[in-house]
Image 1 (tube, rainbow, N blue to C red):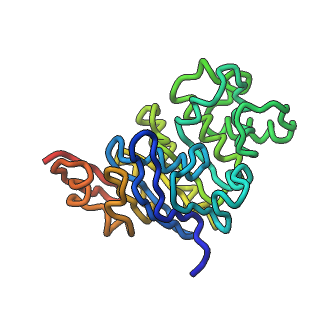
Image 2: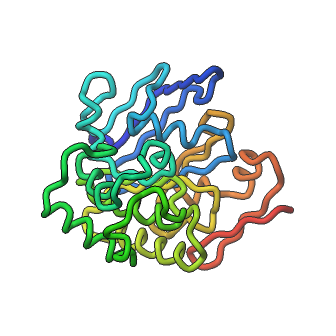
Length: 259
């Protein structure tokens, strides 16, 4: 079989209590995944393990040919674009916005060295693309949640990534900004040889036509995984959320309601 873009095998993680309990999951080239599950099911912990911000208790994690524990994950991380609110806990309030964005090139935080001018110009172009040119001279701390999310999107785009992980990327965005962002994600997936997208969300409304597969988590375990149209059902969603829900489809978008 071809080498997967991303693969975890029997991955477990404890932090005082079991959080992930034997997760096995594989992302192949050309696939775009959505991860769904209730609060506390382990979604963010799984992302933190993949990106090396936490270490698994046991199991195997690989990105391409690189295996966690055998390779320098600081280098491997450069192949992973990441948009997550978890980064906000690591970034210093005084960090210039331009430096936050350029740090995505090397997958580092709170840069000590000044970024090269050419890289800063790239960062400025990305800021303009998301409608935030006015933040070019700003610092991280005072930004609104929506502004921080857009800056993190720019940061992820600085990486030369094989996989782009989006951990609740629309959190803090107003409805219009959310739709603009989702349109950008759909366009990114439609480009020739795009990175594999892995999107974590609570909202089925954010699952776009570009998403090909779904991973459903419940209580730290895989409840179901596979092709979107096979996995994304009212029955599966009712099981993971512990309540009767009805999934409906409107064109290529979804909606969910209690029954």
